[in-house]
Length: 251
Image 1 (cartoon, rainbow, N blue to C red):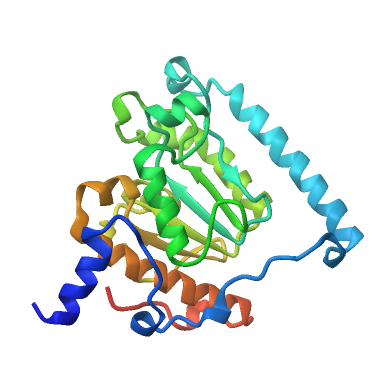
Image 2: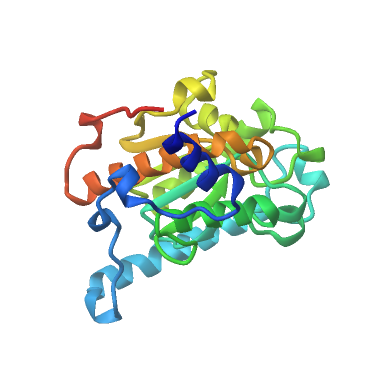
């Protein structure tokens, strides 16, 4: 193992903090999304449009809270609809709530949530701005098992409507279950990573679930490359370039 490889593994696998290395990954800092500095930058038309969109998302959240379409509704404590900026450019989708999420009604809390926050911080993002986080299913599968095909199918209309209302510029599928359900495939995560997939015209990038990374530290380096790839794709989008012109990167 050469010194450079050892240094990367040390930074990404043995330390709890993720941080951005522009000299290593050559990501253009200007590619990050810019946020409005004050309300004057938002037109009255956009404000009204966003208000209506927010109401529709709240109505959808209420509908989810009353859903009894599958047996998960019988064992849940809370539904976990999603959280974040309702006008997000970035949409992160996991597989389903865990025990802590079921207790709080919020996605990605606990150790996996902390790691996700570090991953976001590494590419200079956070949950408060331009990020929305949700799951394939909105209720916790017992014993944190993967959701069944039937359970995912019952929740799919809610997720589809969420995506339609949020209108993200890019989707990040966190883990195999999320990727396979969004892309309607049974491919391995290794074969899905490193490529730009098309979800109804929205670029979709596949990476590992934070809970998996907590158990498999060496894979953090791969997840880091996925995040850098996603950020470069967002840079193309912000420059009004088609991200599908360059559909893969080294994994």
